[in-house]
Length: 425
Image 1: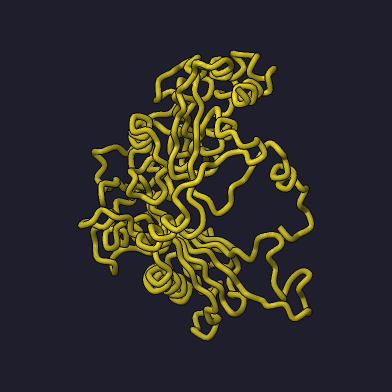
Image 2: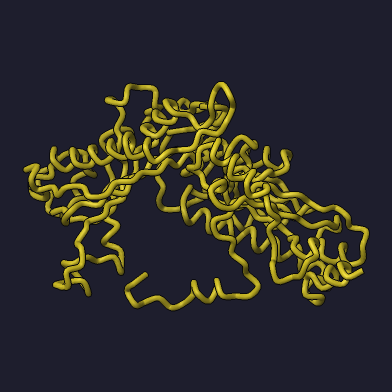
């Protein structure tokens, strides 16, 4: 934050004794303990099925997405394998470390075990998630820090000179024919991220870096994933993204595309989007001389294989769908704003779904018998993005609360009180 306006909400949430955050940890496996015969188990299961979830996680080097497979296997062997996750202040009883419900929010959790992000989700539920998601929209992003501030009169801009709304690019063409850049934003324009020329850092010798986040087009990302897939076609092993690759291929290519867009004075919005633009070019907004662009002092990049779900009107018949290593991707585009209920696969307005158990009538997926849920924009019927994800999460939370409230003894007993007594037997 850094701008002095933080209200402390984040610290309040994280300091709540009920919440435990496992940093540097990836959930690698979930198992349901279905021994509902003991007293108290039926009381906390809203569906009457009993049982709790045990979560197992990987920490350290083996948990990170960019660790080579061989190094991850060695680190996991040295650490003794997966560790059981749960409330550390509940004593030594394993049962007290279990969970009444599991909510998944990452589409990649339902990948097969070959994928680093797989959480070992039961296949019958994982298949429902994959069916609802349909296809993924891949993106690459790059963080570029320039030595000084770019002399442009905007902090964010969309590029529409290739594909665009209704575009049909599929990632099948040569890289030279694929528009690389979709969106760029000046990260240092955010509150609390001002440099030497502004705010508290002015005149105090603080470094003035102009940081920009660049986002690729889906077509460009798909072309790169086709070149370097996430799964080895021969061994089936997960292929992590490496820093060497990211900073030598997609990172520099996105940076170069951004510089070229500025220097050629073209490809930016539709004329009215750029302050100072008078004739459909950037002539009034950007000095075209190369010397006007500061040197790059930092560059990093990231692959988002599952950046967004595809729009709901795109199904297996879509002309922009491609499958790589068994994973369907779709580069078809439609407006991302305003957030609205999309027609097509799955989803319904909140008021239409309260008592409907059909998957297509909710903005989340639920297995009430096992208290297993998937939330996020990938399963929502709304436009892909933050708002669709938030609505999905709120709907899922309300649904879980309704399930738990069916048995008031769950709350009256403090949820796990019966389990604590059982553990002492």
